[in-house]
Image (cartoon, rainbow, N blue to C red; front, side, top):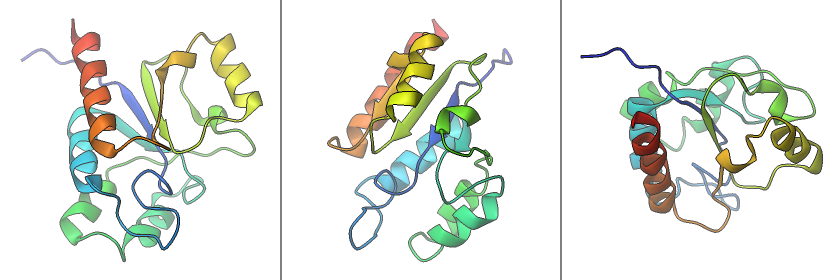
Length: 143
């Protein structure tokens, strides 16, 4: 089997894996977790992880069974200050999943890097739709 480079996936927590109000796992969050860690080089892009994966896992522990926490612990940390785009590797193919549109300054960075269209926003879409879009990215990337 040919060794292929995985697309980087930058993942938020609140509003993506968990609901924002009365936090609980969103429908199909377990399926998204499994699909993501099996098919992408995953990175946290969330306020719950600034350089240390343990804080994200501690935050998620009440919401997911151990099997999913082990999968989530494979997601690598990022570190950023004001802009999430500071943590993105623009030299690599990537997808950024977030529940909010990027700030204007982040949109400017994405536009300047010509990467603006690689964002999936899940604020009004279900996670099955997100999984379908990620699968589309994989199919396109592997051609």
